[in-house]
Length: 230
Image 1 (spheres, one colour):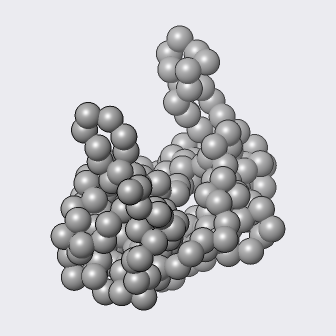
Image 2 (tube, one colour; image 1 turned 30 degrees about the vertical axis):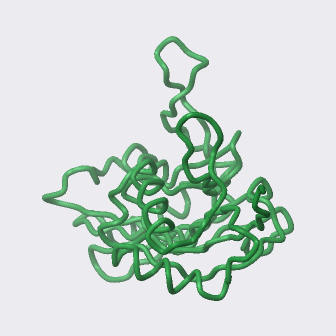
């Protein structure tokens, strides 16, 4: 008899050292945790069946996130209220399940993502913060990978897809940038483009770890209705 399934959504965070694992490694980690937790989920078909997992908007390597989502089809008899605890007991410390529930939205409805970037560098001061705020009020071109050119790169204006951006001075040598950018497939903006633009237009070097450091945290994602996605 073919078991019946129900879709459940697992909301989790990926912070600390977990920001350095690739999406492939995250996929393996979640499959292992589900198996060890005894949560029975639908598998792919064929000669080598594997748990069928669907992630939304995976964060890039080096990006922390407190709003990651994973959909699985669990057996209908699964006690959803116990999944969170079972998974957290089988996940590494820097990956934590925040909530488990039956989804009412689809991942394709995600349109935007909010990030907080913190930059520490001798070049960061009140004047730099002002210039960053001014920068994104005009076209901002960065190099983006593409299949449309022989070189594999193109200059792309990201300004229309930076929905909002506010740069503030935390203290001398440290700024914080809160931004909402497009997360749709055709116009997806990697938050690293913000850093690239600052380096290019303000002639600062944020790539030398001996003189500067920056962190990227995804804090929220939004749906087409403008509401926080869940």
